[in-house]
Length: 180
Image 1 (cartoon, rainbow, N blue to C red):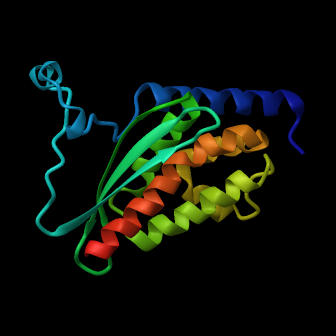
Image 2: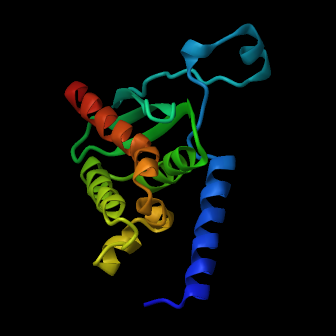
């Protein structure tokens, strides 16, 4: 068992990683349906033009408990094995949901759909651990920075925040594969 002072330091480091990822999120863009004249002139929007060799999938997720929401857009290659070519998202919510989305993008972009689904299952297992973490060190290592959400898994009301983007990723990939 980890000494209390060391555990507190680790928890603080995890909180700092979550806050940093939520302040500077990877993959966050403003989607085209939200275009306004002001946004276009300021260069704040992204037009979602499909890649020729990709199928796109998009999923909107909403957590009615806290109001967090996100739309996740995924481009998956047509070639087998299907690879995630691009993941972008738009939304709002607490630092946990925003950081989880950001770290998820960094983890899955460029991987195959099968690899992303393995990460999805591993992240779910982490969230189900209620703070205990993962039994296999190799699985924990695969999660990279997403392991910081181990502390979040102690709080059932916050687990949904951390899983919001991952559920959207899974749904978006499924929608893209139907088109591939």
